[in-house]
Image (cartoon, rainbow, N blue to C red):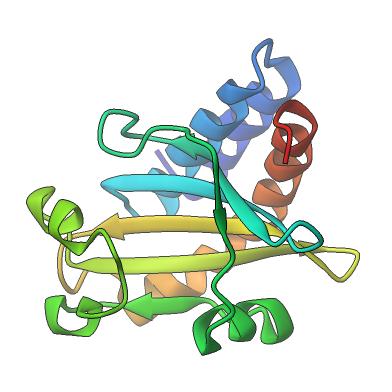
Length: 165
């Protein structure tokens, strides 16, 4: 399937969803086509309340939709919020100290991650979080990940109306 075809499939699924969670699944399938991904989650951010909430997971057994977690205002988060920086870690060594659930991530065979901030109206709505095998997120895939921002904005708007943040 070409990227253009993947976008058309996404658009059709977005136009016809009956369950808001279907929009997260549609974005996951689009991300698989555009950048490749073994684990895909969407995290909604509520700056005023100071917390985040996972609103979609491609692996609900390992990463279920649970309650909220406090926002960690570290340099990584600030770069996403202020610079809209897509953050990539492409090696197992680079992931050390970056993820509190690193043992679980590694047990799934994942040693590369990409986080894409999604903003609208100068508000950080959330992040796309994609993980795959070490070295997977090449420069070309990082560039292509930016193509997911507009579709993800629509999905976050839908999911933020569905979940209490």
